[in-house]
Length: 155
Image 1 (cartoon, rainbow, N blue to C red):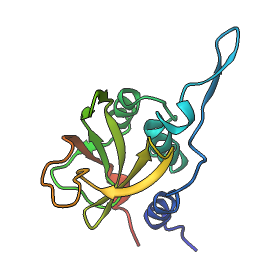
Image 2 (image 1 turned 90 degrees about the horizontal axis):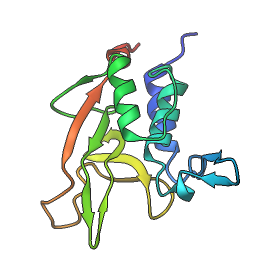
Image 3 (image 1 turned 90 degrees about the vertical axis):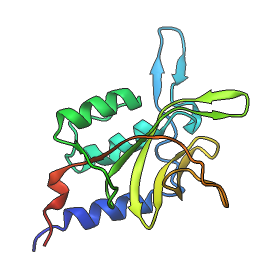
């Protein structure tokens, strides 16, 4: 039997919706324990990089979009113009009322949907791939859509 890596990869991404597994990452600063993922508020890069590392698509998990982006480029991921299921999307910063949101990263899963960590819920959620709200054409700016040729190998 031959493992179906792409199919399993997509399944893991889709089955992550609602999982609290990526919510926390603890460090000790010499005095106390700190959750630098802030109970899921800052877990997008952690979530994406754990899944990618699980499938040997990057060498190590990371906690920032910048580090994941660097690792993606070093691991053979290339920019593509149109998303396809399994692609990585990097969104630019966005404004949320009074505060400016950080860059964000997630997976494109097809049918104009993406899965990424929802900072308000603290776990991965499915959403419009451009973060458009109902009846709105405006979404969040997409900085990059990335693909790894290893995902092209299918049975």
